[in-house]
Amino acid sequence: MVRSCMPASGNGADRTSVNKIGRPRRRWCARLTIALAVAGMANVGACSSGAAPTPAGETTSTARSRPSPSDDPKVTDAEAKAVAVYQGYVAAYAHAAKSANVNDPDLPRYIGGGLLSLSQHDLRVMGDNGAVQVGAPTATVMSTTVDLAGPPPTVTIQACVDYSSYRLVYKSNQSPVPNSTPSPTRYTTTATVSLYSDGRWRVSQDVPHRDTPC
Image 1 (cartoon, helix red, strand yellow):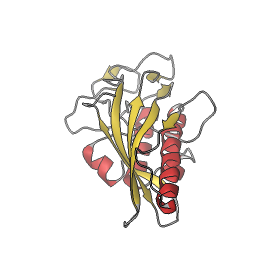
Image 2: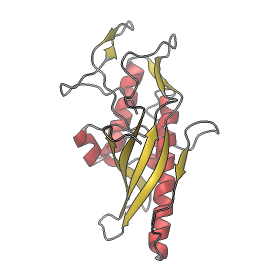
Image 3: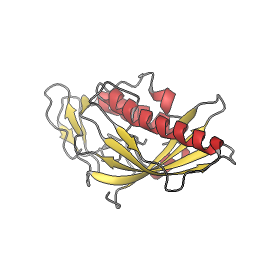
Image 4: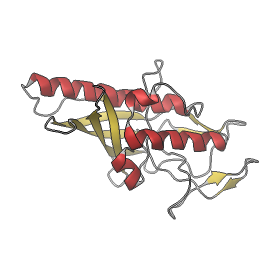
């Protein structure tokens, strides 16, 4: 959702980080959501920013119906479940990032594969550097594409993520982490929600398109 994450080590990208005594040093990056990165996400260097259902007032995601709803009940059911999981993913990561909690039980509930590993890695880097998230991004689902042919069955979600209320701060004094504000603060993202062998839908990939404001 899916976020201006705190990616760790570099591929040469512009990053900022802090050392043990809280002194900033170049190393992080603003790589969002959400998201979040299963096989594809991790490979493109996108971030996860996302999360599970959280108390009212936190991250919210508003889904809009596809332009041409299907009459096939299986497609309709898959679409509804995938959108709910995507909303849960955005909320769950935001909730975990408030305390840099790698072991938040909602993370594996909504996120799968490489994207889960990347999300937990980002949270671990945040915690190691004494940073936490304040506020949360919001995600609005704009369209969905259902493919039940598989394997695995997937639902591709196009969403607009808004980071206007998001901040990354040092937990010790609540001062902002340098260079951690996403730019632009609103842009589109493409998330893939996959049906796993245990029968649960999870977000497996989340690719941000920072060059496409929304």
